[in-house]
Image 1 (cartoon, one colour):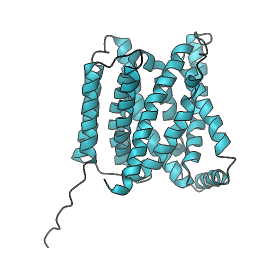
Image 2 (cartoon, helix red, strand yellow; image 1 turned 30 degrees about the horizontal axis):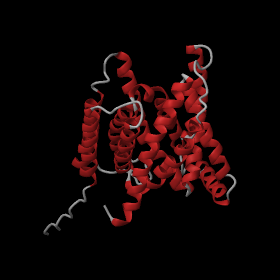
Image 3 (cartoon, helix red, strand yellow; image 1 turned 120 degrees about the vertical axis):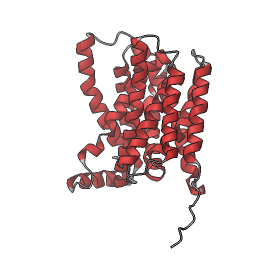
Image 4 (cartoon, one colour; image 1 turned 30 degrees about the vertical axis):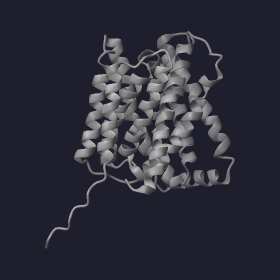
Length: 313
């Protein structure tokens, strides 16, 4: 790791802490409302309002939006590369649905496994702006260790089909998160602005949730069974999400999806443990073991590669 990349590593870790805090806020909001999708719409809506106050009102933001429109017109940017927000919608829904039951620690470890495996594949096919990255032994070790961490941390939670489903949801969200990071980084590279990429992400996520909510209401029937909580901080998940997307868009362009994902995992796990320690959940020994495994995976993946001596002839 070059010294010039150390600030990016710090940003990625900070984004991971933000993911853990956002998970707790959206999870508690979903538990109060009794509906994870409604909680996700509130979180996404606040993020959209913030970005609409930032991007279209600034000269740089308007220029970035024009560059995106022109790139779409000449097909320098494909329409499907703007759909990272669909993955973002899945992630915030998984927060609202499963965090209150699993706890932040188990939720984050499950996301870690999905993100590790997904980032490896995303880097290999070149969804991000940096193009394809090779699959090396260290990358495979990091991704595999993340999956093993899921099995260790989640074994006490798998008491029935419901628990299995709750654990599978954040794993799928982790896979989606790696795709989202790559696509948003590509949009941000073309726009020249992480905030414009974040706006595209949030608008697409909001549209996705607007489609999902009526379907969920038809299946469930009636409105949310809970109530709007009085605690104002529970409505701040969208604001944190804006910062996370901006950080990811900036860092992935330089570090790649897998390295960004693994570094952000450090922040996620440490933030999740602190939240669980001071909250209603107490992390079991298996969660601590999973954290140790994941930190080891980060270290192995980010070890500097020794230069190979020139081959004779």
